[in-house]
Length: 427
Image (tube, rainbow, N blue to C red):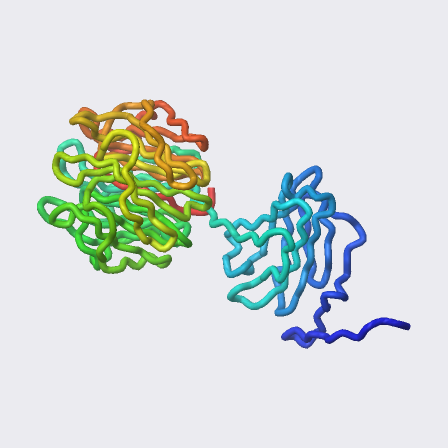
């Protein structure tokens, strides 16, 4: 017998792990849409006819190794999709989407530990990273009623964009509240005022849409702001009014803990529009707002995946305020319905997947100001409520290509200056 002796690696259980040269390659080329992979094996994956979702072992041990190869150079047409089956993949949880989409690629992964999980030790064409999952449902809450009084009622939004009837208030009634998604699948309502009192209280929303009781404010009592999510499970509230126009920010970590308000960047203003953009909604943009009682800006400020504001960029279109915003299409945003030249308008500005604001276009639906919006159904948006001739509860769905639908009759109680955010990975 001829050959070369190689070192053997012992797993934690004492079983000898397969060495790279000793992998057992499957003789059958995989052509199906699913594969349950085993440690110590290599697979030729042919995606000519369909994508292939590979489920990794659920009980992986340190040193477990699996190799996949693009048999027909078709992964760029039909991807190899990795389901890490409860374990992490490159440190990201199983809820993240991991796919490989380069023709002719091969992928060699090894299980490290519970923290990082499966790690590619070589992927000869490109190092792909996971894309954060998106939310499927939304929640609308708080605001001013037709008589001007504050409310704390909420309304759930289904994965089909259907607004449910009112749910009785849990949090303190207040106006000009902001909201954002945090932790990937949960939401937070923040700030607002009732009467002459601003407060920084917050209310967390779990991934079933249940609103928690008030949490005493750590951040300054900011009103007339907007919330956005960015990065991996992070959120923040930027710009607004704290005894005057401000560019300050209050950040929220992935556990829903609100940090103290800190100084920000860019022109101080309130009532801007805001939306998430980029793959997985990892970045955000603020657009427009009021830098004084009569000056409406077109400034744009991008928010990084760590919550850093960029300096002002003079924007396009007309200076507007009291705008609604939402994410759509998986990587783009929309800012619509606002106040311009002392009139309510239904003007739309789309946000590209690199944060560029498009020119004004005439929109569909009742012109109004002081509404809100959120993503839903993974890749669509919804714009809700506002002030037309009075408080309204109408909504407008936004398709995954950014097309705004005509008005949907109000189910929610009409109100203006409410807030909305996405929650739940489940439809």
